Length: 280
Image (cartoon, rainbow, N blue to C red; front, top):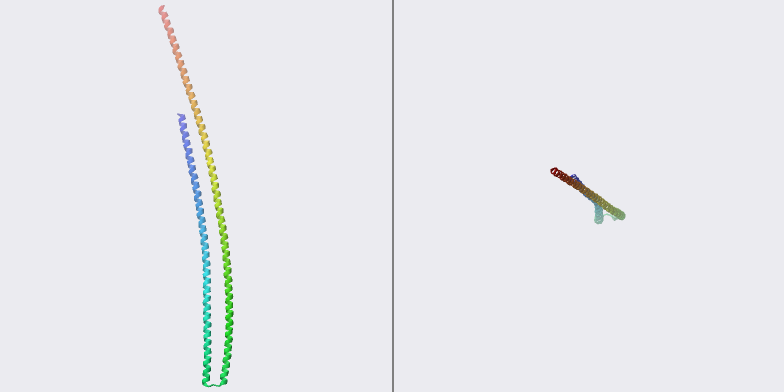
């Protein structure tokens, strides 16, 4: 009975060890799940950072587009001013033609009024001088327009140089973005390699745990085998003990049989004695 209770306790301990191993497997699975969730959260944070960088780049591109629109509006305003200047020049030319016509009319009126030819010539010379001055002013205005066009061409060349510099800056920014994308791709590859190394380490740890579990199972098997061997030995010992008991029982039985035999012998002896007594 003691042995049965011992075996029951051993079985209970075995069940407890099995439950502990089951809990260990559950903790291991939970740990792996937690690591996977953490890696997923890290990937999500990385994707969010990438989206933020993309939004930042989009904002930068929008600012650049806004600057381009502003430059376009400035060019449009410049064209408007040029058109207005051209209209002003046209009005000035119209006024000049009107003055010219007025001069002709004045001459005609002077002729009609019969004023003196000398005064008329003087006025004519004056008008000629005036016209000369006006022509000089016109030439000056032409030269000014030429200078203005030259300045405009210079401004346009400067704007073109600025646009070229801006394009160069944009190309440089694009090269910088490309370098950043290259670095980002390299970092992504490095992260992937690190994750692969981590997975490899995890697989190695899992193999090690499996080997440890295998060793544990082997130790458990050896322990159970030894326990079974001890149990068999105890059983053999109990069998020997039972055999010794049976042997002692048989010995006692033989002793009792010998005692009965002696008793019968004594009884025969007494019977003989009684017989002799009767004979006497």
